[in-house]
Length: 515
Image (tube, rainbow, N blue to C red; front, top):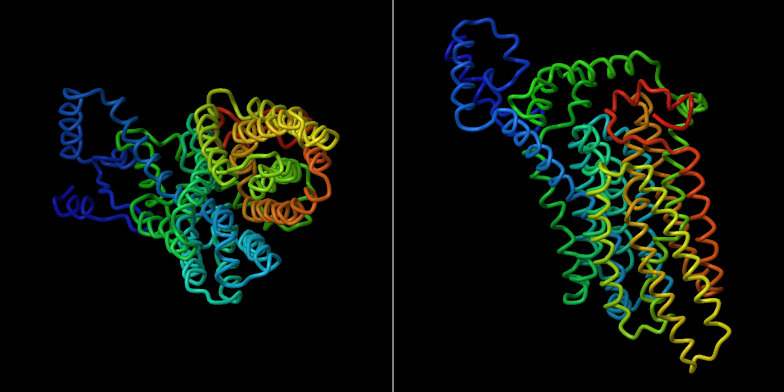
C-alpha cells in the first residue's frame, strides 16, 4: 500500500455516509481483512500492540461504538423535540394570540388542530421520501418547512399565515414521526435498540415541556422564533453522523455501507457477520416484487402491519392527547386554581416517567412494559371517571367534593405516568422493528398516517366530549385502554434481544404471538 493511497483514504470525509470521521485501512476490520500487503499487516500489528498497552481493546471498541451511536441518536432527537414543541406551542399561547390577532375560539381551535392535517400529508409521503433521499436527507426535507412555518407564525398578522405556518410544521412533523424511529432502529445494536428507540418519545415530551416552560415567560411571537432552534441544530448536525447502514446497503453503496456500520460499531470491531446479515436481508427484500395494497392482505404482511397500526391507533384513542391538550380545562374542572402551573408539573412528570421507560425498555422487555402500562392506564382512567361522576352528585361546598377533585388529579397524574412507561414510546419502537424491510415504505407510511388521523379525531372531539360529560368521556377512554391491554396480551410479540434481520426470518408473521 503506497503512502499516497493511505493518505487519500485517511483524509477523505465520507460525505456520502454523512460523517466527517477519518476512515482508513487500519481502522476498519473489513478493510483490514482485504489488505494483503506485509507492510500494512505490520503497521496494524504495531498499532494494536500500542493500544493494548494503554487500555483494553474490547472495552475501547465498545466505547467508540456506543459514543458514535449515542451521538447519532442525540442529533436526530432534535427532530422529535421539534415535534413536541409544535404540539405544546398552543397551550401557553392561546389567550395572547386570541387577544393580539382578534381571533375567535373556533379560529384558534383550527390553528391548533390543522397541524394534524399537515402531518397526515407528511406521513403519506414519509416512506417514499425516506427511501429516496435517505434517512438523513428526509430529516433535512422535514426541517426546512418547519423553519419556514415558525417564521410564518412569528410574523403573522392574520389567520392566513398562521394556518400556512401550522400546515408546514405539520408536514415536517409527519416526516419526522416516521423517519426518526426507523433511523434509530436501523443504527442501534440489538442490546440497545429498545432504550435508544424510546429516546424518540422522551424527546417529544421534552419538546412539549420546553414549550410549556418558555411560554410562561415570552410572547407567542418570540416563542415561535425559539421553535426554529431544534431544526437549526438538526440540519447541520446531520453532517456529522453516518447514514443508516441498511439504507446504504439497499442503495448498493457498499463502501459507504461498510464505513457507516464500522463507525457505529467501533473502528476495531469485526463487523463482517453483521454486515453479511444486513446484505442478505436487503438482497432477499429486493428480490421480491413491488408491494401493493393488495399484497398487504397476505398474513406475512398484514399481521405485523395490524400490530403496528393497532398500537398507534389505540394509544391515541385512550385519549391521552385530548387530556394533555385540554389539561388546563380539566384541572380547572377539578378545582385546581393554578392550572398553567399544574400543566407544567404534569409535563415534568411525563418527561421523568418516559426517561424511566427508556432505561427499562431493554431490561424488562417491550411486551411486559406495554402490559403494565395499559393496565395502569385503565385503572387510572376508571379512577378519574368515578371521581367526576361522584363530583356531579355532591354539593360544590362539601368537603367531599374537594376530595373527589383531588382524586381526579391523582388519577390524571397516574395516567400520564403509566402512559409514559410504555404505551407512549414503545409502539413506535415496535413498529420500526417488526415491519418487513420490503413493506416498510408503504406500511410505515400507512401506520404513521393512521396515527395522525386518530390524533386529529381525538383532539377535535375531546373538548366536545368533556363538555358533554367528564365522567362519560373518561369511561370511553378507559374502555379503549382495557381493549389495548387485551390486544397487547394476545397479539403483540416480544422483540427484546433480537436483531432486525432475525425478526425478518422469524415465524412471528405466521404464528402471531412471539418471536
